[in-house]
Amino acid sequence: MRQFLRREWIILLILFATLMFAVAIYPSLPEQVPIHWNIKGEIDDYASKTFGAFFIPILNIIMYVFFLVLPKLDPKKQNYEKFTASYKIIRYCFHIFMVLTYLVTILASLGYKVDVSLWIPVAVAILFILIGNIMGRVRHNYFVGFKFPWTLANEEVWKKTHRFGSKLMVLGGFIALIGAFLTQGSMRFIVLMVGVLAPTIITAIYSYLVYKNIAKE
Image: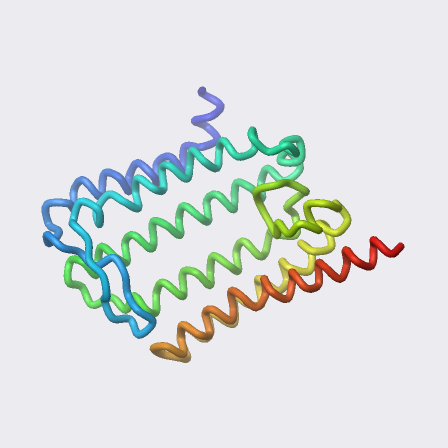
């Protein structure tokens, strides 16, 4: 337990602080809080303040446990030891992204002028860049990475796919990040989707071609 706390104390502190913030901010929230914005940045859905205050902090804690359990369930769990540091970075990036998203929505709920249509795409783009930067180090497994049938079937395809896909993720993230500041409204959303989806689609095609080539050989 002592080793676990020494290894995990930073993210545990972040999760605990977010939950305590939710408890503290709860009385100040309106009875109905915004939980969804359309591509133009306009609020189009509301929920109770209990949901708005606690859903993301509790979901973040659940995901924390989920990330800890995943390696133990994976048939290739021994491979996680080969990218322990990268897996930890992925986990941290996800949890911090959730916290930042939560803070943006809470500020909007409290009436602050926060451009959700800008800062959420910025956060997504940065997350994509950070994870893409280490995706090439992720080893063969069933839960993390580009999990296409052909990458799961062949470790060599996995390696080539992730080296290629990691570069596209970083590029796509920068395109989405720049687009977030240079565009507005629906165009900002379109650029974000291009930056996020195009790398995945191109990587899938590349990966399949690599698989077919190796199969022929």
